[in-house]
Amino acid sequence: MNDRAAIEAEQLYALAQKFDALRGEITVPRTPNDLPHLVKASQQLATLSGLVKYLSGEVLVCAANDDPGLDLGPVIHAYTTAAEPAGRAVEDYTRAYAQLGFLRRFAEAPYSGNLRDARDAAFRVAREHMIYVCDGLLEVSSNLRGSADRLDHTPPHVLAALSPSARPTNSLYRLPSKPDTHALSPVRLAYTPSPRRPR
Image (cartoon, rainbow, N blue to C red; front, side):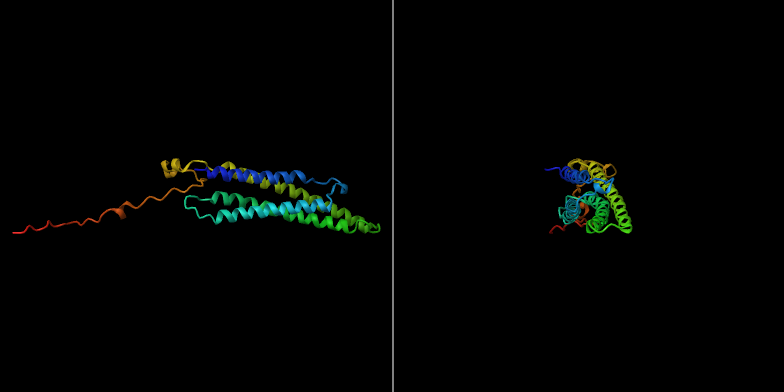
């Protein structure tokens, strides 16, 4: 039998690596010249949105699971917990993205003091939100790894031998319910008369 907990943990670790890889590609600009080109920013935002979509897809698959021997609640919790900072990262990236669009729109506009101030403000807003994006991506990967670390790998036959109080709470395996022995026992009357003998 495959260790389903190990498989799920491996998927959580792999997804954490994808968020880390994206965070490695995103740099926090120190000057306006460090801001990403809109092509690169568009690709990064698309990648981030795709990762969030993947999170919800995994929740969908787990929630639709109909295997009576599995309880994928801990895995669902791992993905939904990671979805919150991932969603914030998308929001922050889109706010920075809007500022990049503004700077692109007025890149060749005639110089004026007001435009200079607006460009400076756009840079500061974009930089602030890129910091938040990187923080959010780090939180996502940390959450996923932490959840994967906590998944219990105790096989079902060992779980069955443990007392209820000793069973781990983060196991994916459900124990088969024991049949009701009272329901299967023959019904006995309090008094059963002996059969009569013929005379």
